[in-house]
Image 1 (cartoon, rainbow, N blue to C red):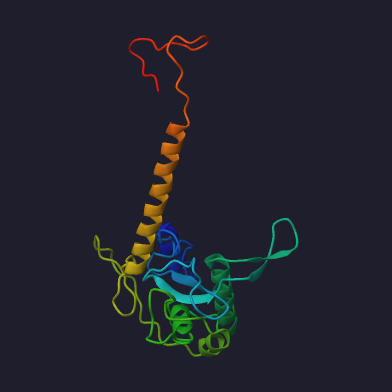
Image 2 (image 1 turned 45 degrees about the vertical axis):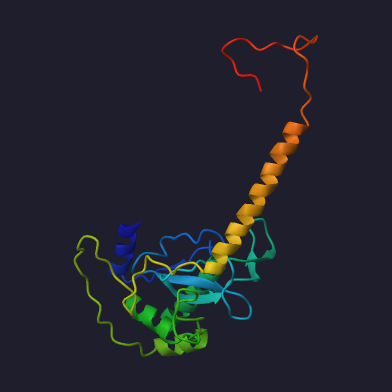
Length: 226
């Protein structure tokens, strides 16, 4: 995949990818969103806040609506869907309009314009929604006169890798909120109590059959009988 992404970059192709939908589960890293040079798109709810499922990582660049999106189905008709995939599709549509405005855009310029024109969240960029919710109209207008592309190919040097504009690596994520850990531990404790109770009830419900009773197979030596 990295070879394909490198080829796309050399060919002047802008690549976007959904950030991932595990934000309310294990918050796993999603690829190709986690690779340098890829515009990672997080998902927002209708009110502009992060969708609960949207993965939280520092590789997030921008965000787009991802809840209640009308989508065509593979069986015909339409339905509402949720996910960072429809969010990425909307962001890709904006990038397509940017290229229609300026076919000479480079991937770096498309990235910079898309980020520079977002509805920047209070406090600046974050791992939740990247640099903010995309602004289609502003991005298309800005594509007409993009900033100069000063990027150039660099040699790979072992474990070193590209980072975000503020120097944050793209393959890390913030520590989980302690409240989430506490909630998880409480849920696990309650589940363990129910499981233990179920085992005790199952054992107490077994009938003890006298040894030698008719129709009962006797245990053979060397075998375990529960």
